[in-house]
Image (cartoon, rainbow, N blue to C red; front, side, top):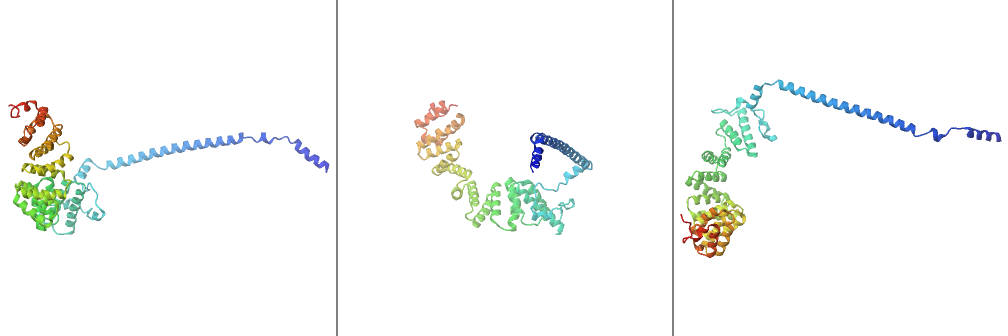
Length: 366
């Protein structure tokens, strides 16, 4: 037994292998470095292969495009442009049924068209494209399409009101009147009556304008457009009381319409209603602070209504907005008579025109 123990001890004592020295990290590092080299080679190969694929794809696309282009001649492209049927705007899905029906043979030509499916589709095609043109404010293109629809079926209703309005907006009043008269034959409504009234005002056919606008006002007594157009009409007819009545009604309903308020203020001043004009002008100079003529007109209104201090104050603000030459012309106005002899007015004259202030009648010598 003792021998057995000694033999076992001798075995361990005589075993000279050092596990710590024989097993070192060197072997692991070599394996890792080999693995990393393999990864780098793989990445390089993948990159090269990817670049090659991209270059081949680009080359293939170029070849395909060149082959497609070579199939068309210059004349082919010219004909394509001449027969451009695709609109510059898309159609809603519900209207797409008309696409594919357009053909050169279906272009509108003079003469009656049969009430057949192809011509109905051709007319619908033009109407829908006209409506789509209006959504992008392409007025000329819209009129072109609607005209073609009427060429197909001249008795078609519902198109003249729109065409009349568009020609009115373009300032083609004679053509607008033609379409709006036809629209009224189809059926009387406020919009057509109001638009044709405005058209006849522009054409200076005031009796017709009054007839249609009064009818529009009868249909919709509180519609502000009718009041505005009637005010403009009666101003042109010099029926001042009626004009003032409709201007007042319109301004009450549309107090933010600065342009119409300015028109009304000048109209009041022109008709000698200075107190009413001063109220509007006082509002306008707050909104349009840099408009010199408004300041001078308000100063006139204050002078004419005996509000001398306000007139001088307004003049001082006005001359800061204008050159001395135009200021001299405005200060010559006879409406400044009530304040012309005041020291404050003379100082304003001295500021813009010394010679004008020293002459006996406060006018420049010729």
